[in-house]
Image (cartoon, rainbow over all chains, first blue to last red; front, top):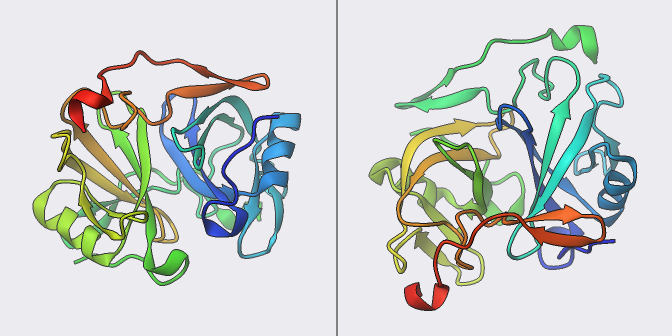
Length: 124
Length: 124
């Protein structure tokens, strides 16, 4: 199994950029530890390490918005990866948007540039 | 000026996903502190915080491979941003590739899926 530089920074964690395999939109950034990495490779479904809940997290376990792994890219330093995924359901963001990056810098404020896809109260 | 959650994690640093504005390829992942963020907003050129050299880093300062900011996206938690950039020169990666993510997982090994764009010895 391919190893990553888990012990270089960040308490055994490596950041993951999760990108939609069709639109190439960046959906989210999250972290993995070695166990989440191995579970992702083994199951073909995106697993992460939740820093707030301090546990392994299968993306979509509560919302049903599973991410199926299409490809995984590894950077030059082996301390960051990209999950290229098929996002099941309307979105990756717990705020109800397709991407967590639904706002952009517009002068001194943030402007929403995406349509909301679902009401989080219906899902979580 | 828009503030980010610099003090939430990672010693005052926030990760940046840098994405090519045309191809939407993810070029690299790096970190910013508040000063790098302010310099990026002010100059329209991507600045980062180098964790190894412990200093502000204008991307391209030695290679000439400047990244011009086209848009900046901010995530739901305000602890990650995307720089959408025009990458000047042949590539973002110090290994000579357009993207740092020039390898992908292929079974138990990593496979190069990009053409090398330049010889790092000629640039750095």
